[in-house]
Length: 146
Image (cartoon, rainbow, N blue to C red; front, side):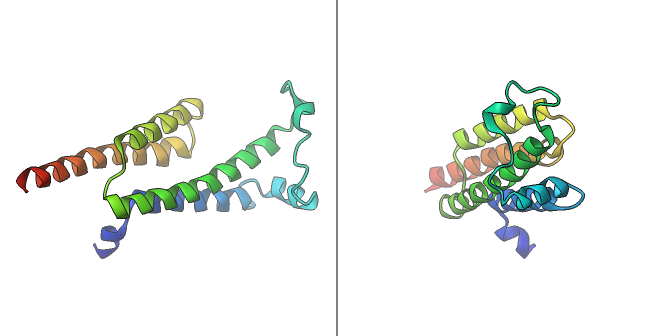
């Protein structure tokens, strides 16, 4: 129970980000693509605009997927640090942030339904919204009593 006392939504986001990066670099994830990236010293992982318009044989979709999967994990880590900091200082995230997070994750679920967005992030986003409402109600009651 003591662990849950210190748990924040930010820590969940950091965990999801670390797991994203770990899976991207693993042999069961995008390990093959990252070996190629490292052989190229991570400077040229695509031909940029030359690969557009996207077409089979012209665009390396595996490289794009590998890069964005990895990059999304990296973006989740500082977002988690920020969310953790806000929750520790203010006690609750703003409704606008929580709703925006839910919308962004909802778009991800719609675009890639059989993914971690659906199985991990969407339930977390719903939890954040419910938690926000409960926490705000409790804080509102405390303010009314004082």
